[in-house]
Amino acid sequence: MTTVRVVLPGHLRNLARVSGEVDLDVAGPVTVRLLLDALEDRFPALRGTIRDRVTGRRRAFVRFYACEQDLSNEPPDSPLPPPVSAALAAGAEPFLVIGAMAGG
Amino acid sequence: MTQVRVLAGTRKGAFVLTSDGKRRKWSVTGPHFAGWEIYHLKGSPADPNRVYASQNSGWFGQIIQRSDDGGLTWNPAGNDFTYAGGDPGTHLWYDGTQRPWEFKRIWHLEPSLTDPDTVYAGAEDAALYRSTDGAGTWTELTGLRKHATGPQWQPGAGGLCLHTIILQEPRIYAAISAAGTFRSDDNGETWQTVNRGLLSDGIPNPDAEAGHCVHHVEAHPSRPDTLFMQKHWDVMRSDDAGENWTEISGNLPSDFGFPIGVHSHEPETLYVVPITSDELHFPPDGRLRVYRSRSGGHEWEPLTNGLPQQDCYVNVYRDAMAVDTLDECGIYFGTTGGQVYASPDSGDTWEPIVRDLPAVLSVEVQVLP
Picture 1 (cartoon, chains in turn cyan, orange):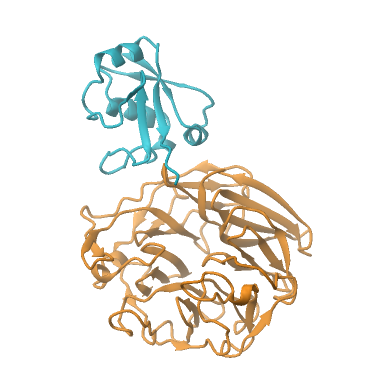
Picture 2 (picture 1 turned 180 degrees about the vertical axis):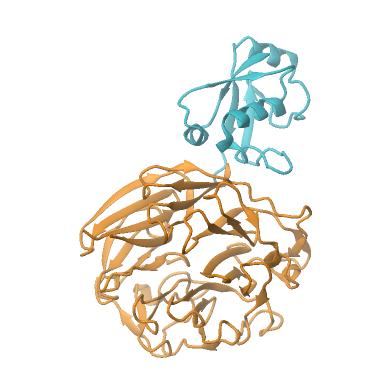
């Protein structure tokens, strides 16, 4: 079991009713899908806000980062790159869910 | 003591405005759900403290919120609006091709008249949902979206939105831009178009069965077969449950607009807010005027006392007008400029309750004993 620190954007923190980082337990190699599954299991109000309920695709203006790497387009079932996984597993870096800068 | 509660949905949150029965002094709470678009919020007629809200964001999608204490506190409810039956099929797109139905947001929430846990939701892309567990879970009433005309429905400029739900159970009316008005006589199982008499210049067949840009429809509870409609252009009425429509625009300075209201005690007294045109979404001559007809249409009088009569270029959206049920009927509407206006005397005089909210998307009102 790996514990991963997750940082949510302000609107989703309000929806989940948390004020800071969230610690999520993930079984096995860390993937985007496992992280989001764990997040939604713990905070059902977040279902549908990060990824489409039916297709599972990331919403257009939500991005994922860790260790200064853009993980938004990582295959959801692929283990994250080893340096990222190691940093997340060690708690040295958080997994960031970000509302994209999409104004105009 | 009687209390009046106005529920305002805006581009950047929800606001709850309260007053006593005189409706002259108001207190404001909010923003609730700050930063989110609140397309609509509405209280249950069966339990005024039960309020439902549609919360949406281009980033994070659709949330439904529920309050059990009149809007003081809220809890997220169910937001699974998956189209029923697998492949949702397609509808007409602007370029003449077919495009798959794609859920975007809930435009309108209509609580049951009798059961606080039953509520209907109108979606973009057009679909009607019902919850019987207080918005925990939603079931699509597929008979509407799968109507034979469905593949011909094309979005209006605001999207392919189901924006009007009138409950007269087992009868239900629904209106969709730009498909038209539909009626079910069996609690939403099957639907028929009720658009005969609507004429829409600019569509291939001006009197088509479907394809009309209906902006809003209202009915007075005492006359369920009489409907009033603000269409894209034209103000219309039907006295036979939508089977036939006739134009009642009469002497309005423009018959383009979005909301239409019906006086709570005078079923032939109507309210509209004329807008210059579909190209100029502001009041004619920069003068914000509500028009009232006391004769069921045709003859209209401008109501201006307390409304800005120069340099006013706001719009009033389709769900942003409401009437209360006090003896002296109150009329309310919100503007894209962030004002919510109230008239405690059937429209004779107006005052802004608030002036500087974000653009107002919807206004509803409750009278509390």
